[in-house]
Length: 104
Image: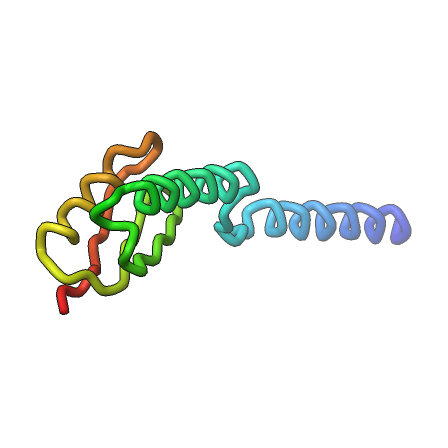
């Protein structure tokens, strides 16, 4: 009888441990698909900026994360900063643009 009680107790403890492990939160990391999508978005924006005659002389950095694009660097006019933002917004998959370009 004692052996049976010990086995039942062990099973209950194991079930409780399994329940706690199943309910534990998992880290929220960027999946492979999201990483590839962001890489494609970044590449498309960089290509369009480099092919634009007005913007190709400026060093504009582009970073994307989950469809949110950040532009940084220096330009010589507000028009250049606005145009870079428009180009970034026009790329498919971009959810929003954070335009941190500095006019020098």
